[in-house]
Image (cartoon, rainbow, N blue to C red; front, top):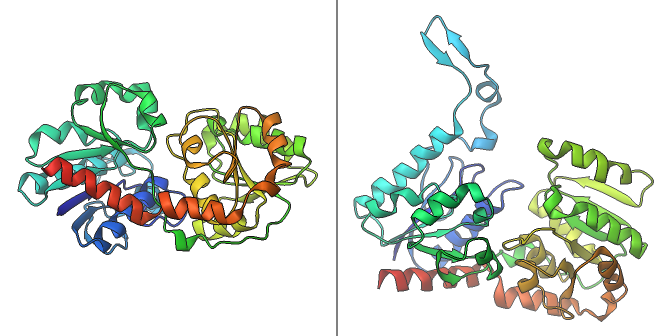
Length: 360
């Protein structure tokens, strides 16, 4: 099939560090090419993919040259123009339009959007099917007017739990995110520390991970992005615990660096307050043979096999109790679960079936 993949443009494909949507779009692109499909991927300049690359945006939005990104806004008497930093929204619109114009010209059998809700409005203007993976963006009520206006178009959920955000949409399949398993080396022998990996946002529950580790009497290492909008939360709930050595922040790590911690950790704590639509961390950790202790909701409740590849809990106290049972988990079972259900190859085959059904 001739497939157009519309990827986000915050980071290149693959992203150098954080960039889960871009990572999934990259893994899918490579998987579809390996299956023999003719793939064109629309992504930011600097992307390194096996498919045909179209890059209207000259830089990833999060890696725009500093001099341009920090240019103060103001009237320039020389040019007569209002000068300032580049508009990410403008570049995103051009990015989407470029893909849709090529679809309108008949270049693709199907277009697959990973770009939030913004490409939905073009759906009735192109001759081929356009399927959307929302990556949890239906969680925001602000996006619902557009989603509901195009509810009849095909959507793919990352987990059955993701559908709860907006059940009215036309979900045609559930396809879990897939990872490149070889990039997460297996290790059976574990150290004593617990690991939290993810954004330091209240809904992600890093403070709950601290609580659980404290109750279990285990050292906790924490990795992930700390964003300015959560500074008050970080100052109150996280920073006071980063003294004394029981809790240590190891930084915002690349995927390769994070894999080194996954493989050595006794377990990964994934105690989210919200219904996480998928949760790549839970799958990446299991690929390294590391059990996951996750809240009993959202995508991780579907990727973790309770009692076999980790434990599903409701509270930090239950998570601490689960730590005492980690010796009952076989690291090989964790790895096999990911290979069988959440590899990039499995994801590509799952989406290929969706495309074929839509084209028929």
